[in-house]
Image 1 (cartoon, rainbow, N blue to C red):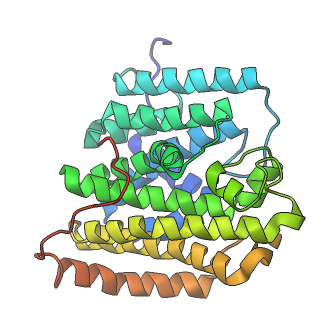
Image 2: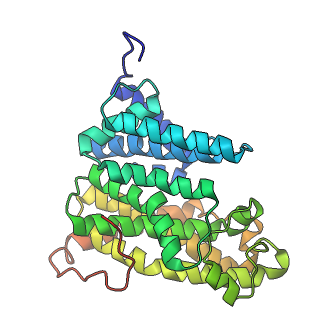
Length: 319
């Protein structure tokens, strides 16, 4: 490391991270605005690193565009992400502001190294071009690229008990299952298939023809099945809301509501929904935010002292 180099002031890192979230995910930015000040800053810092890692592997910038990369280039980028993340976790000086941001949030909230590295393990599955025969196989991927993000974000909100961390992971699983359903056609056009191959086979869809317009109705039925599989994880996450401070509960309930709305919008649009990107309108987002305030208040009030139902039947994450 160059002598005399200093890490950027944390206020600058937070400002950079906030700008990245505002550009990369307006839905998350809207939800994050509901957090208390310190939690909001931590969410920005964590998001910046997660977004950067995803972009590096996909050759994108804040989720937009796509650079054509060879397998060797993607593998090299993956190894750099592992190395830089391990360096940040080890407390070494970071001159890259994204990894300085990650280091700050990881140290403050004691983010487990295994959770951070699991995210990159998920990106390694993308680099390998792995496909998933069953829902359980797909859920392992979803856990790595999204479930652990839910766990790390819960840490930022002050959560340490395993039961609530699992609920946070469940929300990440639900988000990723929804993302996959939304992006099915675009992903398949790029050679990426995330729907369970067994389900596609049952629907008569060859894995190399997921983006074929002639099979759109059959693919839609599989995507709808996947969204139905996400519902128990959304339900589990709602239970976890009652364990959070009100502003955090409101923010998480808002994000949960908006993402569930993506799935509902897709289903309502039918097979033609993929003709354009499935988005939630601004009025619908505002409605979900307002609804979330009620959900958070109810969860923390009437439901807070009720016995917590178990996660029977749900995929069990390695928390």
